[in-house]
Image (cartoon, rainbow, N blue to C red):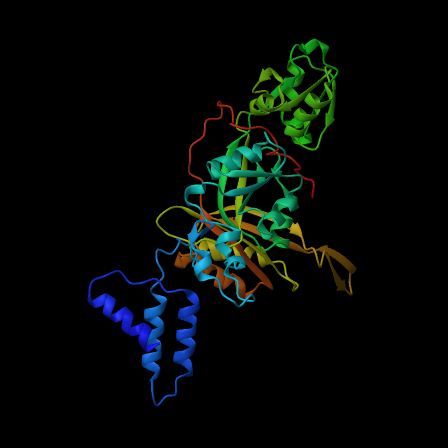
Length: 422
């Protein structure tokens, strides 16, 4: 080892290139350095010699990239000069362990974000996902709960699901799923609903025998269809975009579907009538769901959604909740009651009137304030004193973008899909 070190030192001092040393020579030198008695070589000498010998490898190959990041597990380019005799230690088979960033990257501005929605391509939910996260990778799901599970299982990064429609009311199924799953509301988006009457190319209105769509879409276009003279059978379908797909797939020339212009483009249908909804102010509100909550802020309008319950007797719970918000001048935008899933009925015994049965309810409340606002914090602290259950579903920015009720929406149906299915 001393001879090798001396040769390296002399060559370096003369300014000549450092001679290439085979791995076998370097390994034997280091082994010799380790086996040298402490009396003839100190630990510092051994470390210095190994450092000098290990630095003599010429032009090592750059480490490969795994998921865009460089690793240091690749062997040098000249495998003949660096092969080891230890077969058990082979760096060519080693891989960098996967991390959370590998499983679910967090791109900026929604680029390549995987967003789950309920319905088929052309659904209004797909349009809402595109509005919430431009340039996202939209993932269709056949059921609302599948979209929840897609986010929980890291198949998707976000989910965009409808919670209420201006004409059809609340979508109770999704309110129940919000309580059952542990996802967080991180935003909202409002989307105008613009229905169209679609049929196969060449089909005329007078040849139609039935119209199919989601029940809510049929109800929202009932008067317009009557004014058009379409007194035909109206049949319910799972969703509106699915109805358009059904007509196109089965070649039904006597059937029309209520969906959107985008659904017509996707499935090769013609638009027989545009904007057939009875009310132009037909808007669906969607919420954006994620595995982690966002940090609430006070520099822009925020909305907070909570759910609460009360398991003790008394009729003043809702009054106390409203008082807690009213005292602090916090505006409520929604109150929704749903039967208590685990305690749907409460028995009340009265010696004078007998036994009465009352329904137990969970209350979903939206209010206009951020959880970073001290008023909201104090209101929830007061509410928690007289409730048995209180959970914040999310504190998120309000959708303040203006919309034009006369303009067609960018995608098709299913904003009202599966409404009242729960």
